[in-house]
Length: 300
Image (cartoon, rainbow, N blue to C red; front, side, top):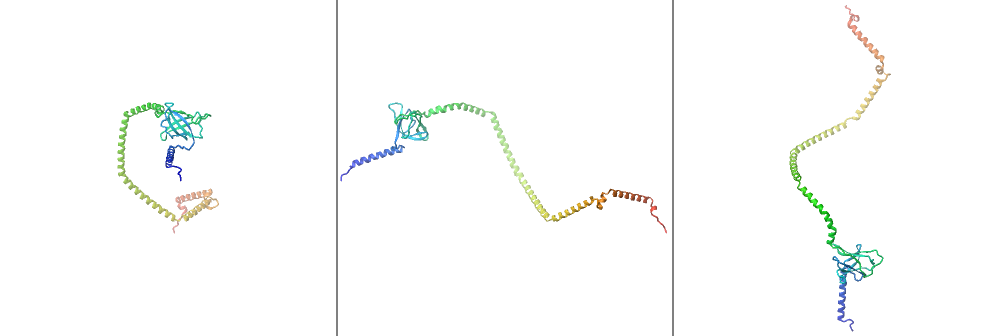
């Protein structure tokens, strides 16, 4: 049977397929999908600031494409041509601008600032670029004015600090603080001595007071127990009975119908008693003066 492919042709096709796979693999590792359709545009820069092939192309932070080629523009010396590939469905207005942005972590990338024109840029057209400023220019334009405004304040601060440090009052204050520290140390030592000397006696007194309080509490408990054993209920009944009798007696004394009430409330009886008492007194006086009138003694 006649062979369709010779040995040399098979080897050649294998080499070509291997090369194709190698190219596709390299592009894939770069992040470029050769099988995905894309539109190509050109942007010319004076400085690419470290931009590399396969760098992302984004719009408002969203990736829409990649940098495919970076070539020196020999037709326009001084410019570097950057070929970018974006999604085929993306339409770019004519007034769109391409800016190279540099990040410390992710490196340089192309940021498309879409314009508002209704006329779209044709595929392969040139996008207007914005020349990025280098790091030193940014530092000079942004930071240097602020640094220059801060320097007089720093100089004034250093001067005031020097005046404060060289002030004699600072040294005297430090000496005073040293003396205060020494006094605090001596006070602390004296306090420790006092505590070690007096605290044991105070604690002994506290223990004795505690023992006395315990004894008082025990006595109070015993007194309470004895009070509970007293016949308080019968005593209260007796007191109530006595109180009722006193009330009855008081009512009888105040009443004019009873004998005691009449004696206490009848003024006529009081006056009679006074007269009788006076007559008895006069009689006794007269008996003392004239005993023979009332007493007769006959001798047999």
